[in-house]
Length: 532
Image (cartoon, rainbow, N blue to C red; front, side, top):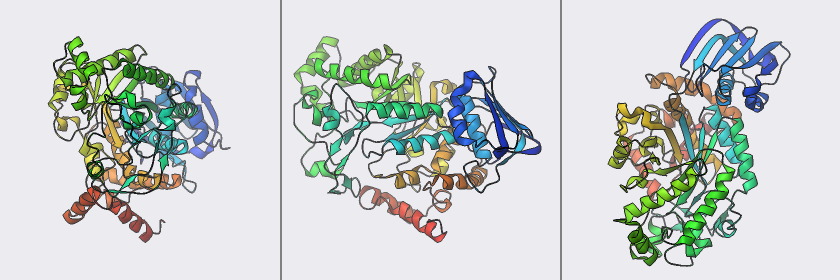
């Protein structure tokens, strides 16, 4: 069976079943949360075949067992999520989304369970906003690949994308910018097109409910105390210095240097009780919207120069006995962690949050930096937990020539300095798509597919990796992506090893020039194949 991700165990038996002939569906009450997905996948034919979804406590949390006979299918699972993954396996195996396919599957037994409990994908909507239908589409495709956490990056310097009723200026001002930077990190031009957008709280609830039906939890990220420029545009008093500035239209690089804005990425004034009250108010409203027991606060790339000079921050350091700004940052993280624990949630931050020795080790670190971070190793030794998002394996905003798909597929956490004996400290893996240079779904899909298949298999399937065998299944999966209308990368892009000249050209243009060279290569290949 051409299933992605590869199941743990498949035992084939004689006979076949036409899944389009399923007419009788019965779901145990404990698992009826998967009924919406089943209704969207199975058309209920007139062939008399049955589908039974049965609760079986012997299955692991996300595990399942499927028994297929010529008369029908039985799904066994202990949780709704396990039942959802079983349905998705049948959906892929039977090519149920492909109209002209034969929707038959081989009879037999499939036993399956994931290697990692956390298989996430970060979508950055602070840089470019996509909207409800787009994010639902991503969730649908994540579920098809058995990814179970959408990490929703909702705020950053370039935009605040979620309604906070107590602070309406966050979206009235912070969700809008005059234009967007183009031509790479060292480019100096804007596109001249105003960019705006945010999610109302009602829309957030709609997306969360949609995701839950598909086995996907949503992790909100509200970046703090740095990457706060959009919030400062709305409420300048949140910073150590009250400076009135617009939401930056640039993402970094050369533009702020040329404009003389050396401190555009500033940190919130955590010595100011009003700032801390603001943060708690924001946490209150957002925590009500997301039932997931985790909350991401970013915590990366935190400038500290203003803290060193700010009277309120210096007074905080003296009062709390903090020896330096790293401990001050850790103090802030601990305060937010304490507040979140009161709401039944744990704090997650990028691995920069680990610098202070006074950090509460129940904080979860997301390990993204390309090189070895010894603070991560220390955190694990002290009992801390990590998510693996290593830049060169899981940053999908970089071209395939720069971060090859094979590298993602063959990822092992031990490559990153995490020893096998600390396997229990790894919650899982997560891909990331930062959208500075991804303004629309056409490019977003190209960057994500079929990389999502490689990440899916790296996070779900245990055992030895076989790249060539995997590529065959990726190719067989293409009709499903076609049925969804996905603009995926062609195999000439993701499967081969690009020559050095092409790789260097792409890398150079990523920083200064045309960030869409590989996308254009792909469009030309599709046109040649008659796919456009």
